[in-house]
Image 1 (cartoon, rainbow, N blue to C red):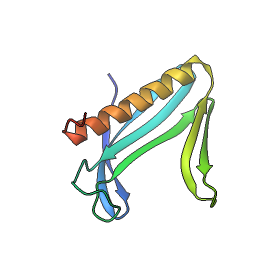
Image 2 (tube, rainbow, N blue to C red):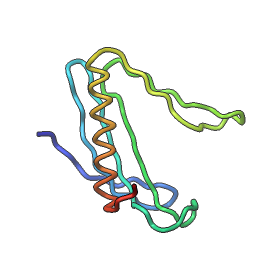
Image 3 (cartoon, rainbow, N blue to C red):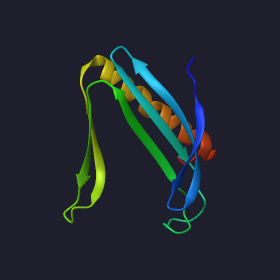
Length: 110
């Protein structure tokens, strides 16, 4: 079993309850945090829900890089890792983030 802690992230002025855990495997370790306010019935920045996912490399061969658009603004991220332990850790981190978000949504959206 692994320890999950709770925290709060502030996203555009709104508090979002998040869940955190450390993923460690062999020579890699990641800290992952995810949370959401869920669906709130609005689709705009001012009134819509908030969602947060963060992954921090504690140790291992990971590369995180922002993706820039034509205006030089950050529009995405690239994540790369090496080795079987890296692959296993990133899979577990993304799986944990997905589970945390789905647990908070409490709604089926097929």
